[in-house]
Image 1 (cartoon, rainbow, N blue to C red):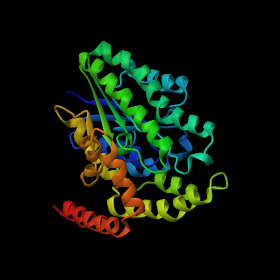
Image 2 (image 1 turned 30 degrees about the vertical axis):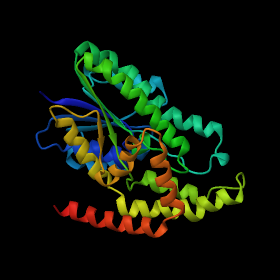
Image 3 (image 1 turned 120 degrees about the vertical axis):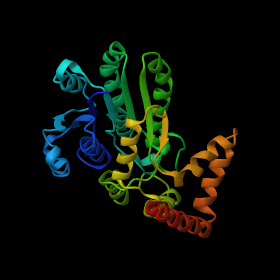
Image 4 (image 1 turned 45 degrees about the vertical axis):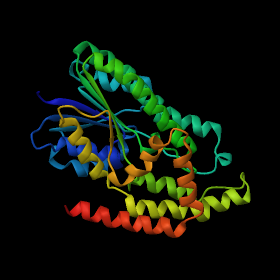
Length: 308
């Protein structure tokens, strides 16, 4: 297999930036990366990280996943419109009590997280079918498998992504096209910091006092503990995405954080759905000491895994 052209979205920071740079720095030069972002004024961090790969194995172009014309213009600018690999990464976050979030904000989130993916696939899939080759890699989340407190709308968008991809994968296989869902757990990025910073300053007057208290006094501290104990770096996710792209038989689903796997496995262990809901309820509201001890053990395991 020769050099593959990879289109990566959402590359101004975080996972998208790390994936674009990792592929551009592939030791065997197997990839030509087209790193895209909505606002090219935010390209500085990517340019610095790309180093001498810039204009060699990595180029930066504008692309707004919420605009079909923008996607088409980017794809049309490539020789023969050829995109061998799509890494759909662009996304936005949302946390907080449902009552304080507007339906318009929810629609905007779905427009990026779900319909952004749909627009990309609609543009690229026909060409991949004609060539009988291609690989579509989608940055999903463990929250596409298991919902989480105060992440109702974000989790819903990732559930939609997972259902879309699971349905499409069967057709894609017929045309020799691979489809892979990358499912990170907590990842420490500017994306996450921004979401939680906004949450701390959120106007909670639209919800009841108890819900506001749970969000501020339980959920936010709980999340900080999870991120500090289980959080990965974008580079770790990028490395695993690189390995997935060079694999002979890439998986359909890949969770990047093995320490998070037991939490998502609970969903499949009980067909009634009660086990994960009860477990998360008890972890958050009833067993604070057990929760803290479990995170301590996981932190230790993570350090040992990193050294091995």
